[in-house]
Amino acid sequence: MEPELDERDILVLECIRDSGEPMGSWSLVDRLEAHGHKVSSASIGRMLYRLERLGYVVGQSNRGRVITDEGRRAIGASKAQNSMESHRQRLEHLVNSKVLEEFLMVLQARRAIERETARLAAENITEAQERALERILEEQEEKSKRNESIADIDIAFHREIAKASHNFALQALYEILATMRQQSELFEFVRSRVDSTYRQAHRSILKALCAHDGDEAERCIMRHMDSLIDDVTKYWDLYAESDADSPRREQEKTDEPR
Image (cartoon, rainbow, N blue to C red; front, side, top):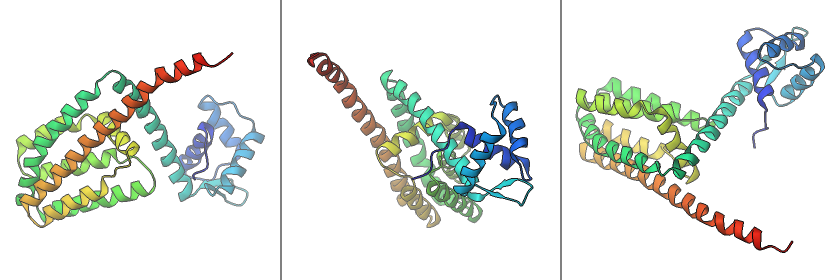
């Protein structure tokens, strides 16, 4: 389990990362004050000692501390977690508002567009585009290992397939949907709650594209989109069920003897 870092821990790590040189406690006091955090040098010293024990910073003799690769990963993981929490709250509002129906409509539109896009991409993809898709999936797998958001990677993967179709109309249609970045992150959150992943589906799609097998590429993309739709529906059903239980729990509290 990752150690819990608060806002000031992350800010200290970011200051050290961005400085490009070792930083001591007094320098960090000034930096944090500039960000609206008034902290004593002694408090900064204790924070640095804790971060060093965690392996996120390392001392450079008497010059101060520099960030480690683990520290950089900790910043990314923390920001991803904060982003997911923000989108969780947004999603709860959307579910309550029944706007999730619109998400399903967008997925159904993507399903129709990407079915033809995948078939054309299998016929027209170049070696350079195959390598580009491979690099995208490698980056996706690395981000997944670090528990970082892969929403941007998902968009990049499907955008590259649209380009590989060499059909400008289909590319334009996908770009309209790709601009809905927040929606992609919300879908990612839904999938994380129902324990689904993108990796296997994306690998199967790429394999079919590289084999120039239009039928298989179409089948793979359809399975992928159907899975997305199922995941959104599944989470919606789970949420609706728990929401329906809420009045019952409130009534049980009311009926408890005082």
